[in-house]
Length: 503
Ligand code: SF4
Image 1: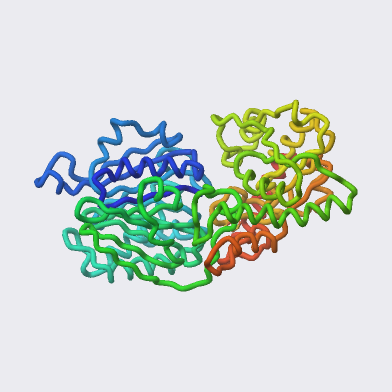
Image 2: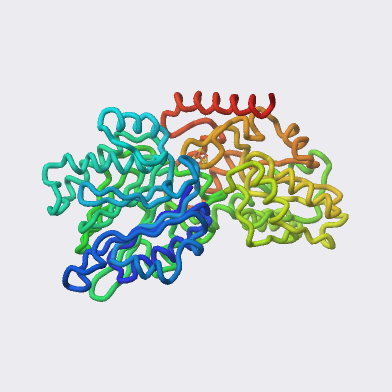
């Protein structure tokens, strides 16, 4: 999962891309980059600033950028990326935006995961004699798009990119890719291109704002970035839709492919910022719904087992909203008694087991005076590997809780995600081939209660206006695209890794 932004028509395009990335920092904390293009028009003549400018590095957005390097990103068009690594390596060369010099000069940022990237990459190498510089699926998409654009008859350097040719090239890309992708492309002297995969698995929203006598446009992963910068939402890009805003500010838009809309449920459960609205469905409202639906389950489960709770405690930050709703529905007091050290990276985003375990120890401190002797209903957004949850139960017990009931706002995650969330192997998932009692034992809790799949679906659909059936493949195994070959590969990889870990 990553955060992407694109701006065109603003005199502060790179600075706005930087601020936009800051609001999307929760989507990826490994690295960040911005690419701008300066056509030299501001100076009225060729200047030393003409051309592409790029700054990228490993680390958080505000550690990568400063006043000086942003000042060097001139031009009225820019794309930016906050990276969360799922494919490729963690090297600087893998950090986006990527850039290709032909045709036109194309920069690209991508949020999602291309399931068939490996086979497309080997085809690019063998049939097209491309030397790929990275292990990233984004470089594969960039090469495919460049190929398509270079084959369009009108598209030779120094000509204007016409929308029909662009539609043809992007349609070909749609035809080749399997997976999730929200993509922004900056084409030198032409404009900003945005497209979203045919199932709309990853979000992408666009908006505009008055800028002098014209308009500036922004496209981003989440509406929070648009509103922060004063852009009014126009709408979400539809699945399979292409948006092209040219240098003159003309907007061209067309839906190229129509398939079932299957946005990722995890955006509403965990990833997206609470103030964002994704596919006309507010994240905050969906999380309230998650708490409301959970209340029924929690009430009956506790009653069936003769248990009672004294306080509802959220695991900050993403579980807060659902926990408030749960506490209101149950009539059990809400207490924020796990205090977060805000300078520690989000646990789930960390990429190794060792790093994750250390982070759990460091990131939360319990308020012992409020926890001691209480029966605690601990609410978290999800249980993935169980590492964090086990530590949390331990932490609350050590603070003196007499009972710890663990509640997950997400149903059990039992299958890998092939679309960009980092839980790719079944064997790593605590809910894989374990029932609630076994999970309870693994976590050391006095009860474990999960959201139901129906409850999750209702919480999302009741919060919004659009009718769609979210991707819930990691809960149900029903993938929006054909992953049969890749499923086998992922399972095998998981088995091999386990063998290595337990000789
Ligand atoms: S498999 Fe799960 S995490 Fe991955 S896109 Fe689907 S719902 Fe989201």
